[in-house]
Amino acid sequence: MLLLSMLLSNQTGKSSEVILKDVDSLLYVDTDVLFLRPVDDIWKLLRQFNSTQLAAMAPEHEIPKIGWYSRFARHPFYGSAGVNSGVMLMNLTRIRSTQFKNSMISTGLAWEDMLYPLYQKYKNAITWGDQDLLNIIFYFNPECLYVFPCQWNYRPDHCMYGSNCREAEREGVSVLHGNRGVYHDEKQPTFKALYEAIRDFPFQDNLFQSMYYPLQLKFLETVHTLCGRIPQVFLKQIEKTMKRAYEKHVIIHVGPNQMH
Ligand SMILES: *[C@@H]1O[C@H](CO)[C@@H](O)[C@H](O)[C@H]1NC(C)=O
Ligand SMILES: *[C@@H]1O[C@H](CO)[C@@H](O)[C@H](O)[C@H]1NC(C)=O
Image (cartoon, rainbow, N blue to C red; front, side):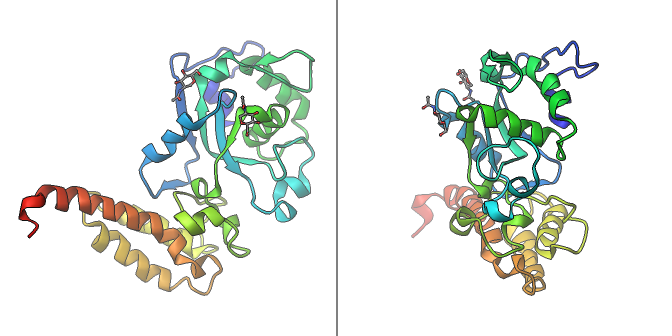
């Protein structure tokens, strides 16, 4: 219940006091998340919210037929396959001022007055903790959610049965989410290779030599897996970041006059 304890002083549940009172917005990420492009790029999505949206997440699955919620959930969930809370933008100013529709009383409830009763009502039916509660909340308040594409929360589910995240095929993975421990076991070697390449990269060092090149070599050993068959999807944003770093440090510093 990371989220509950983060947004509430979650002692007894009876008195739920709001914390982070002066924070306008935040980006919540699980500990198994890696950014393959600048954090500012996801932060910009907050500005794209329409007037009723106050949080943003990616779908839990792209194909409802094989998604977890659509097959197993015993509680309401958002959309056709639910949402994943591993990467989430929240506009707390809006969350604090909104009355949320719910399945307990016919009037709306403030976020902090709703969470604990909602948890009590559904606790025997929920499996994934706070993520299930968020799915219940946005089931009743769909107009409050901005759904961003899967490239912002890319998980093994997006390639282990074949590639099913179109946006990542086009744009590359922006935020990698190695859930179910895949950075530390042998189940998804592509995810593990990326984790190790970033872990071993000496920051400030040459991106091409010390990250991109070793990563490409490691990827050669993963081609026998379904995720390993699409290395471009994992490399595209790193390539863009390298290009940007190069332009910033080389071209700008050399200046136009010395280019001929
Ligand atoms: C969050 O919502 C409030 C109220 O609508 C708005 O003033 C603020 O600019 C929003 N924050 C961001 C980062 O968009
Ligand atoms: C904002 O977008 C959501 C999701 O598309 C939608 O349900 C909601 O009606 C929109 N709100 C407004 C005020 O247009």
